[in-house]
Image (cartoon, rainbow, N blue to C red; front, side):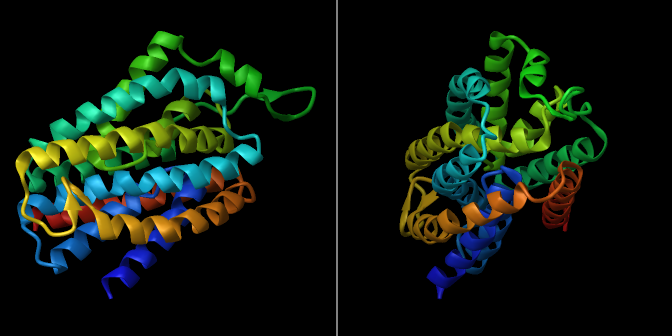
Length: 277
């Protein structure tokens, strides 16, 4: 029964990963929180397990989503190369920081963060750059508006730390960061999917390492990563992420942006409710 539940979570998370470029963490974390609570795990460890396991599964969803977006030419590899080192280092360190925060405070932090990002997605960001000659989005023009390489590296570090604390693939920060500088939504989502890979690998390793240091008493885990949940979610999400990526290229950028913000609003309210009640 547990495996079936993890497979269902994986199907939903994978679709979200391809559609929004978020690695599925915004769905995996709250659902795993519910499942682990029902399994009777210690409240002190539930949130950390949800975060660590979420990042581990994002390794698989990121690969699948990345491949699908890359076929559409939506991954901006020069931007990825600038962000990746900071993302990896920041996420590993962020896992250590998350390990020192209580589960209750993590719930509240994640809830407030997601609501803030949803607000920024609804009302923030610059208009995409359009090529007058072709009346279409210009990747080259958008590139010229991005910050310098050192600033992108620093931004990657901040996104990495936040991603570990929130158990996400970084899309909730990477997508708004890129659209803020004029990138069309599909390009931002595709590049975010690629950025989710170094975040997920470094974050999963970090939660394993720091979790083992705390010697938690939970079966079928390595540190703060639940092995069965990781396998069940990863298997299903690998396939559904491709479907989500296809849908992302069918929808209009503005509609995709609003759907993304709506998803974050619902999840953010859920965590605030659980943390305050």
